[in-house]
Length: 74
Image 1 (cartoon, one colour):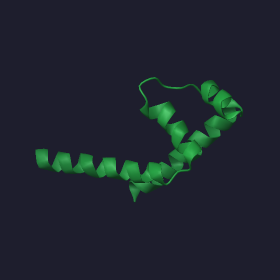
Image 2 (cartoon, one colour):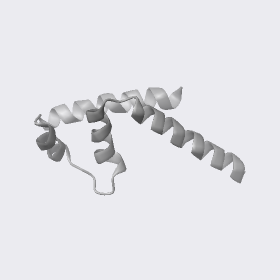
Image 3 (cartoon, rainbow, N blue to C red):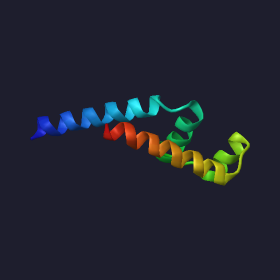
């Protein structure tokens, strides 16, 4: 059971890495800062960084998550 869990975890990590690598730099950075970093960035933080609205950051984040799900489910 432990071997199976370790294998599943490794596979999941590899798929996540592959999914993130398939994104453009901005989308990858948005997901990294919103979901993976210890200090989570807000939509407004990222909007200021990229010079767009918070709503546009939310849209980019949503599109990136869809792309990641597709790769993870493949």
